[in-house]
Image (cartoon, rainbow, N blue to C red; front, side):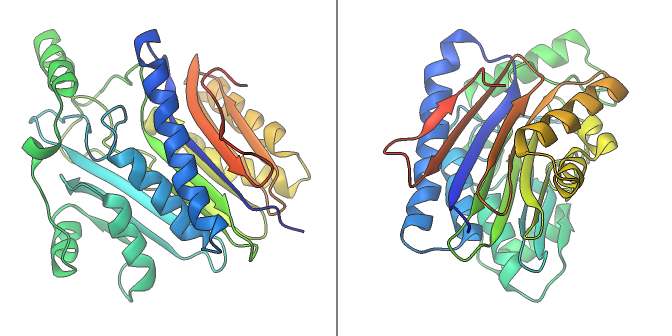
Amino acid sequence: MSKPVVVVHGGAGRIPEHRWDGAMRGVETAAISGWDVINAGGRAVDAVTAAVRSMELDPQFNAGLGGVLNVSGEIRLDAAIQCGRRLEMGAVADLPAMRHPSALVRRMLDEDCSSFLVGAGALRQAEEWGFEAVGTEALVTETRLAQWRAAKHEGVDEQRPVFGDEGDTVGAVALDANGDLAAMTSTGGIVYKAIGRVGDSPVVGSGLVADNELGAASSTGKGEDLLKAVVCQVALDRLHRGDMCLTAARYALERMQRRTMSLGGMILINPYGEVGIHHTSDHMSWAQMDDSLTKPLSGYQFS
């Protein structure tokens, strides 16, 4: 029997001590937002959307408000959602600054449209549906502006962007009472990224995956290497082989580390509500809610 659950992450990396409390509050609030949907009898796809929306409003994270700047000083966003029932998905990449790319990809699940839209095409579809591109000025924070200026001053190569230690991409996975799984990931990418650069976050199999027969996952780390290693699909393949969730997540991330020398993190659940949370980076903020908990279970150094 399925045990409904919501798990979220706020990114893998090295979280500075002064950010610990804020990161914990952010993921706990997000987990509660998602669980409120499940607890009211809602769907997993709406639970992950609510959870990620909460983090897109929190400047602690690199999604929506507080997104990082590319080489031109613009916020460009990537996001995706997948429903495990029939593998429906919606994804956008290189989307001009918008408060809630999560809402846009959720809308894509309900519309007869392309599953993956990029740049001007994504913006055009968003505007047709009434979503507003607010511009970089509305979402940029002093912290992100300072990061961009530092990268520009240091002469960072835009074609070889450096994965920031703080790693604050956001993601969520959920299982509802109907046994449906869902996953969502949302990000601004990497500081000083090249124009048009897309990482793993909107790519099913790398940044996220949901399949009612196997499980749901959301990953975080250096997008180029998460793409190469197809980490989320590897984790689901391990579940298919009979691994427990933690074992599967650990295998996928350690394989990526072995093959690419890159670190990251993952949240993973199976169709029964078992949870696996693992990271090879120093930290990953995460939170979990289910009906056995009166408040979120959370952490930043769990592995």
